[in-house]
Image (cartoon, rainbow, N blue to C red; front, side, top):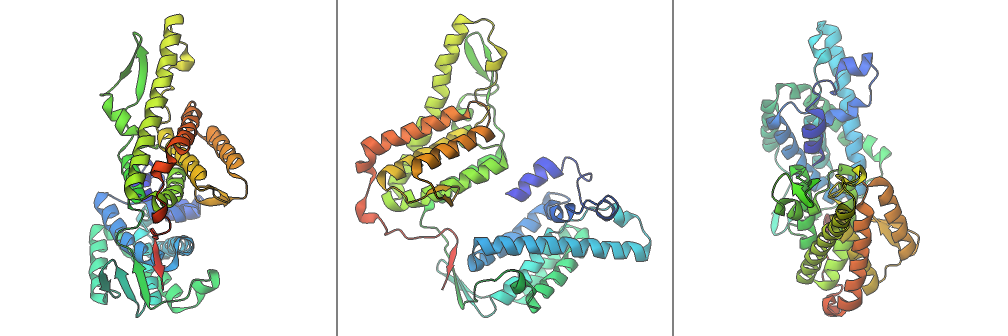
Length: 414
């Protein structure tokens, strides 16, 4: 998702001004672009081939190592492949005396994928991988060679990055360099990757929010005219789609981590069907209240003030993502009233404060980071969650199922 977001919205528009090349790294001293070279792609075919190759390796390695170790390994591999790639290009430019390679953009994700392939083969050598009911081992070398040919065919400039990834992968796989940097978990003979997670409803909503984010932005309220709100397009689309749309990638990551944390716990406690009804009901209620209460206020202002003050124009709908996160806050309130947690958690990270101070702290931080008017939706979400927990928790709770739905969104190693 980050690859597509960076390529389509940031890097492609200013290509090649923002890319990493020998000239920008050595002459201008922009060494940070060595790491961002993994997010550069020449066209749609190139990014599709690279992401597909990286995706399947990432699933297996993250399931084997865990998310924390996988992020560390990935950052190390991206940095090393970028450094080796730019050094190789510098040597080639010095030997050949050509200036064309000095200004050409580096695309290092293919090299990162190859380095992860070598690490994957070394770490899981002889292991049996279980994907649901499917059982298989590490792929033969013929499949790897075919994949390399496809990556090279997608872009001829992938040769140097793939060679850099080969060197980095051999260095980390055949030596003890990686284990000295990160103390990885012990190897295991069996790796279990769940095909369908136990918290399926939470996973579906997270995937849907990612798809909506990649497909946005969507039309929102534009102006007030003749005592009526006007939209550029039909009203149903902003109401249905933009209630889960989050335009900022950082806010989206924070929202999805929070949804993952509270959604897993609630879905295990009350079951898939009850959780689905609860989430859709809270999301609809938050969206309706958030859009209609400002409507009443605005109509009152319109009746008494003409023309409308400039400060009121364009604020409604300025932060479409608050509806989704307000629903997450509502579910936190429901969870607290049903089964109070020992620690308050912000985006899956525990904070050593009680629930209510932690909730106030989180809402204050969100108020500083979000657009004007978003705090109203957050307050609405908390109040709706408290109302549901007060009057409807007994109908939602299912004591016989608590603890029975044990699942994991990643994988487990035994």
